[in-house]
Length: 167
Image 1 (tube, rainbow, N blue to C red):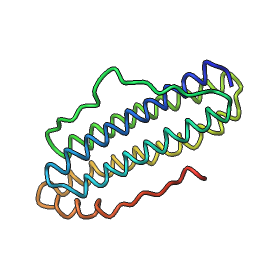
Image 2: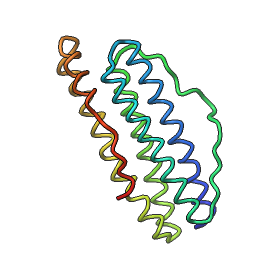
Image 3: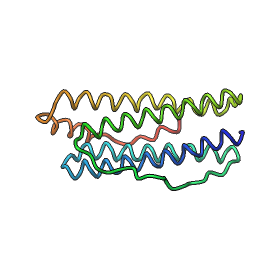
Image 4: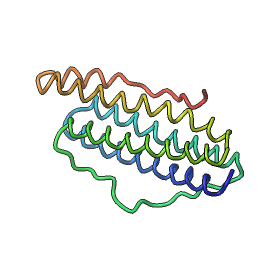
């Protein structure tokens, strides 16, 4: 693997860890607002992002590149005005993640790195699901407003973590 591409993947490792902390902060907000189901949802998002970082780390190691974990230049933030805002910020963030994976895919294509293209394909497909989940959440929040928020919170409480990185 060319160093240029390995560096992009390493940067994504750190961005996935940053993303995990965004979702952990969102979980804290949800729980502080007595929305434990949404808090659970965000806890699962946190776990998924950590798993994504580990998948990237393992690939880099397999390719002979030692990942470097760094600090972030800014705080992930922890102040929100509503659960709708949390979902909207999450969707915007996932769109940034999608752009980053698309850029890495284009770079891998440019460098004729077919193994990395194959590896990145999983993440690109995962991003379709990530964005769809938050789009659905936003739609549902808008549908139910405050009266149904409690029922929607109960639905999100039932989410469980499934490690699908073994596919």
